[in-house]
Amino acid sequence: MIGHGIIWPDIPRVVTGVAEWLACLEIILLLNHRRPQILKGIILCGCLVGQVLLQLWCGTWPLTLWIPGILVNILWMLYTIWLIVPEARLRLLIYSVCRAFVLAELWASLAWLLNCWLIFPLNLRLRYQLSFVLVVYLLLFAAFCYLQRAFALRNISRREAVTAGLTAMMIFAISNVGFISSATQSFFGGSPEVFTARVIVDLCGTLILIIQDNYHAVSQLQNDLQAMDSMMQSQYQQYQEYKQSSELVNQHFHDLKHQLLTLALEDDSQKRRQYLNEINTDINLYNVGVKTGNKIADVILTRKNAYCRQHQITFTCIANGSLLNMINTMDLCSLLGNSLDNAIESVEQLTDPDKRLINLRIVNKGQLVVYQVENYTDNPANFADLPQTTKNDKQRHGFGLRSIRRIAEKYGGTMTVANNNHWFRLTVLFDQQTKTSTK
Image (cartoon, rainbow, N blue to C red; front, side, top):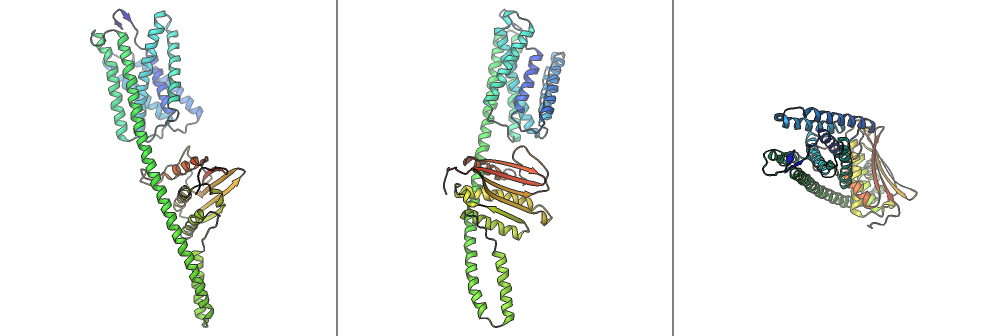
């Protein structure tokens, strides 16, 4: 390119191809994927070679096919991301490739601009210039990894995917219009100005996409927090209802005492036998009390035990509730309610009553409090993070495990989930000396 006597070469196709591959790798690191590391490395190396060769091949096309060549390279970037994260939905793939494309445009234009300013005037061979560009790429890659280390792509709506696509198209069009204008010696003038303007536009475009994404992420986080708060309030209200029900049960047992006195005065053996059967039925119905040493846990577990009996679910409880005394009332209601509700919902899907098994353990090991709920399941699926809700309304459900994780972190603990040998296991570890809050 020539402008005001300054000759700057176009960005080599190899430089653009490497930038596009690195940008895809940057986005892949933000996505949850299950590929083994060795397989992932082989796929990425193959995609790097394919991206560079595709750029070189498109470089031989006539100028009239410039836009189709760009689209072919974008499709290869999308294919690269999909190979590593095949479970990703199409809207997430579109959103990801748009971010990667804009990021690649920024990295390529910035690295080549620095090369033309610092290295090109030294008349060094092309391989030294490419080495310089690679160093710049690595620095940019490390910088963006650091800035986005606590960020991860989430569920993307159709509107967000369309917005990202339109934004990427607009940014690309504005950043490249200078090259057409420079050929007619108008608007931008010399090539240094063209490259500088392109870097500025690509930088602004990248910031726009990041700001948009952060805005949507914050909005979704607020919605999640509101949903979890509503769920915790619901669990607390259930606890209040359970407490009232327990008081009614106690009153009913008090009434049984009077019935026993009446039974003692009854002379008719047939009526006495009938009274005994009725009393025995009542005792079996209400004899579901659980005593753990924590009144809140006692009320909730008693209610859950009664529900399990009524629905042919075997519920085994080995619990020292006093170990959870450091957890305040609402958090404890949410912890017990969510974990047991998830287990009950899972086993109720089993048709064989003998498989409807739930075990609860609250014990201490050294300085740790172990809270563990496990249930039998016929679903052999494994997962890297939190399992997805099985309910149809995924916008309003699926917060139970998130709430439990939040509670664990609030009290300095950790939460893990596992699904092995037909047993789903939720484990929360607390420090026994935690004094975060009181009841």
